[in-house]
Structure formats: structure tokens, C-alpha cells
Image (cartoon, rainbow, N blue to C red; front, side, top):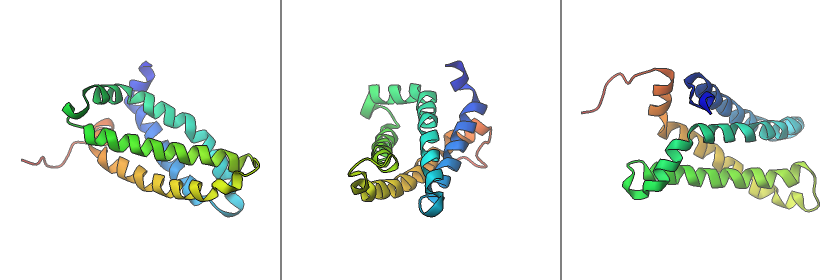
Amino acid sequence: MKILRNKAVRVAVDVTLLVGFIAEFVTREGPDYALHSWIGVVLIPLVGVHLLSNWRWVTSTFKRRTAHPEWPLARFNAAFSIVTSICILSGFPIWLEWPGGDSLSGLHTITGFISIVLALSHLWRNRSRLNALIGRTPRYSPT
């Protein structure tokens, strides 16, 4: 678990997730669909590593709930996780060509697009943490 607290590892995981989500979006149609599927499979454990590396924050926020100053961010992150989980779970029957799997295509596409928007919002909402991880300080501090 100590490696998950390493700043370089956390930044590498976050950057890989960002690149992976963009690659997922770009390869979602056409001849690159197999690549789209494999990128998704690779991203699943990376999402797990990302969650584990932030687990202290997750647990402390949910323990204190509304008393925690970042409770709205925690609720947003939970919604993001649910939408992304639906996208992942609806993608497997399509990829594995299960009978009826094609019927999930619309759900997979919609939750995929929503996940991309939420991922960008997640990055924006956590920009101060990302800056702290890479050692950047804000140019000014609001008073």
C-alpha cells in the first residue's frame, strides 16, 4: 500500500487514466473497436488503483458526510463512479457478443459520453490536488 502513496505513482496512474479515457473515446467506432475494448479492460484495474490510492479521503469523507467540507465533491465522485460502472458493465456483453448484448449498445454509448464529461469535471474539481501532487503551487491565492 505504501507505493500507492507515492506521488510519482499517483500522477502516473492519473495521467494514464486520462490518456486511456481519451483513447477510449477516439477508438469507440470503426476498425479500432477491438482496441477500444482492450483499452477498457486495461483501465479497470487502473481505476481500482486510483480508488485505492485515494481511499483514505473516500472513507474520511463518507464517515463525516455533511460535516466534511468536501461532501459535495464526494457525492459527485460517487455519481461518476456509478455512471462509469454502468458503462463498463454494459460494455462487456457487447464485447463478448453475448446473446442480446447489442441491446445494451445505447446504454453503453450514453453512459460512455456522460463518463467522459464527468471525468473532465472530476479532473477540474480536483485540480488543486493534482497541482499539489506535481509540486505546483497556485500563482496567487484568493483572499
